[in-house]
Image 1 (tube, rainbow, N blue to C red):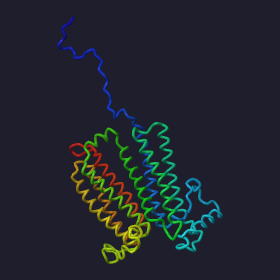
Image 2: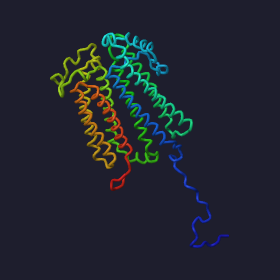
Image 3: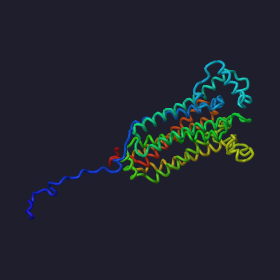
Length: 380
């Protein structure tokens, strides 16, 4: 029998209220995002150092001082006089010694040997740090959902980089070549910057929670992100061209600016046969391509920066401001490098500038893809 209900009675009184269910993004394993981010930052610093040490190895003509690839046993340098003499004799058998460094003393050989050994040793350390971190986080089940493949991929690329490094070195151990093949050097450096870029992107993503990233992506600035992506690709091409310049010492051949030997084009830009070799081995044409790409990168960078000024997000505008400032500085440093015939101390600063600019472009692109929420007054 139905009874009268009080007008003051709570609707649904006596019933158990179901607990709120979290969304799917909250149900996924969050893992040790902070600890993994610190691990990736360590790897990032090591890879950046690896690029700089590699640049110094090239600038000091040390890259061919170790003529064998021994990933494990090569970790130990020569331990006695006999060991040093054996390594020196191996170096004396290659074209670089016979055609360029004939008469080099054992003491001078040790100077270039330590550069290459340090470069390879740093590569081993990077592999070890990656392996310890990945296996540790995997064993503890602390890797966030969706990140296992990404973190494993970094290790795979690192292993491939070691193989590419030897592929590069082997090109200078036979025939009449005095240095490594420039196009192989470009592949080696390009892969290093790709690894560095992935580490930077992962570090940026792990710095924010998944719900925050999902929310931010809804406010993404699609046009600006697309333009920043194009700028990233153009910067990568310029990095590859810089590797070609370094591979044949093209930065030390034409030391006037803005012209080259008094003209817009360098003399005999297509003197080598077949013609395609000029794109990799003709110092004048290679430096010319590097210059033109720098102008295009600078102009397009300013276009992207001008577009970013219209962004409604302060953090995004600031990210592109820093990118534009460093882009200008890198162009100036590149001109100085040419005018002074690429001395070691200036050339290595130019390479360091490339690393910083690369990261700032990626950071600006990230800011366009995942803008930081801010109040009406502009605060984050």
